Length: 468
Image 1 (tube, rainbow, N blue to C red):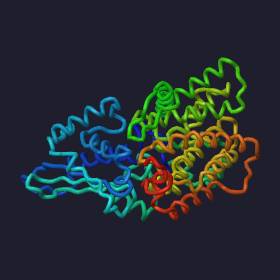
Image 2 (image 1 turned 180 degrees about the horizontal axis):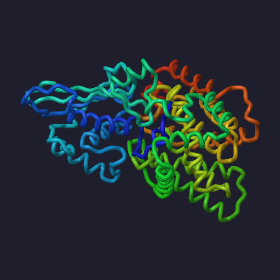
Image 3 (image 1 turned 90 degrees about the vertical axis):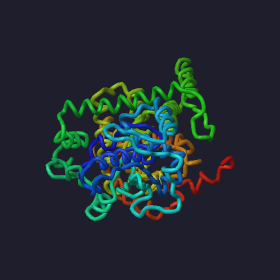
Image 4 (image 1 turned 180 degrees about the vertical axis):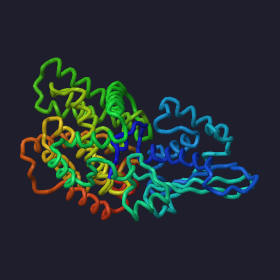
């Protein structure tokens, strides 16, 4: 099993990796298929109109997560990495005005978002809760091409055929495990390989990554990931005002940051100082995410604040922190995230928020424990502690927006991560519940969880807040 660190950490935009970045990527894939040669074209007949439809969770919370906007942007040829958040409204307004799109390399297609983009809440697609279909029609209304895609969490997108192959053969693997020196598929294998090799988890992950790229390319990529995370924190700490979406939730990170800075300068005693900084860093990221800003999936957008907050905490409170330790943190976190995704899920629509903030907290706890000098056994213990204490957490965003309870939930996930790392580093790595058992429990819990609590906004806080 191999998932690259750059599969888990992807630079994109908010508010959701599965509901924004994924659908944008799916739309881009459909454009590529239109230009491809793998579908039969009637002689002399050209594609005239495009019509996408969103199903399941994408339909129920699509507007709140910006899924409709993301699909339109994707059909214009933009991707999560190329779209400029500051230009989104202008691009969307032009599509609405002209009722057409002209992606690079394509002819102009008729596309009226008000009629051609359908949020179908009655017909879920069978493969996954986050399903979408893209159709291309001729001028006379004939259906020429239809493709189904699923956004399976963390910005990952698979076609209908790929999903069926995943179910039959196991998760899609980037080149499989062949040729990678440490192809661990679970924590038990990871610890065994670490014991045999004498390497840390970060070193094994690095060795795997360097089968695909040079050390210089890997380090540059890791530095870019942290640069984007850090910039997101800084932007979030500088912004004020009301977040979009209609809930009228006010940004709080800047105000809290200013208060912490004041306390810091005045040397006022604060027993909760580290927790306060962790919380404000995480909230800054997720307020940016809620506003559609530039973020990094870690492993999802809804959980994007946890890993950056713990990393900034590491730099803030530990004098030994340096650039190399940041890279080791990210590599270790990605190793844990890959295990969770491979054996369970990081998708709120599949398993609830335990798969998003729970996974992020486990990844951050592992990364922090590693750079604090933890052994592989202690790192695995830290990840297990963090994940165990998120088990059963539902995904019930109020109004379908990644704001309440998501923003504060990231703050608490970061606090749990640091606590888990601290507990693990003080032990010898021996513990009662293995990480693999916690991951399997999360998978089973997700299967048992009612659909109302899996990113549909049909249960929990989403329906019990009076104002909604």
